[in-house]
Image 1 (cartoon, rainbow, N blue to C red):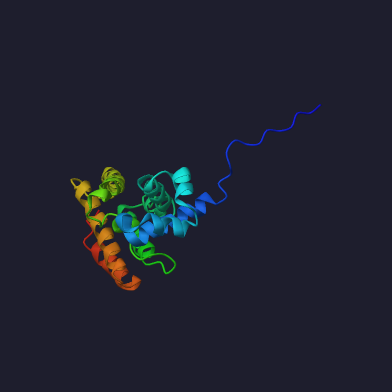
Image 2 (cartoon, rainbow, N blue to C red; image 1 turned 45 degrees about the vertical axis):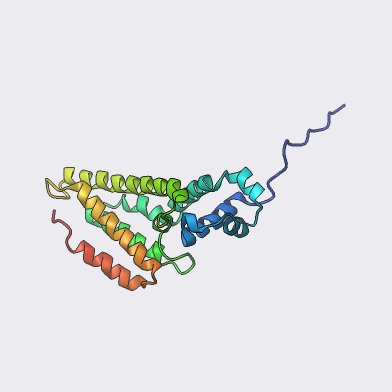
Length: 202
């Protein structure tokens, strides 16, 4: 006689976790870490606080997961830019990606990695630390790519690759702040183009 199958332990979530995370990402993107209340998040995600904690952990953990989703989605231009054949093209693609992502009509203006860190209260410290580490990693990846360009003869010997990477990151972050303030895509692309006019010759 065939034994009946046991019911799975625990109840199914009853919601699309990826869709809920996408919605949480947009709330953090628009309101920053501290500005996004649990009510804002759960309302946008369409779930209860209990379901949020069970699926994603606390607010800090949810933010980290939302940031990873942002890095793999809207901010995926960073990884693509690093694959460009020359250092100048890397910087151009990086800044153009920043302009496009921060001015998308179907998304919040600005950059989650910048918006999320513009809070000053002590409760936001973990988020600020997470974002600082994320930005530092992006800067390090740019620096390593520019060092490879020096080794390949694409950038002049003696180029301060760390400073060059920070320069590109600073322009990118400035673009995000301007976009959040309502600056237009074409105007911000002109800023990116101007920044690249001082690029070191090979």
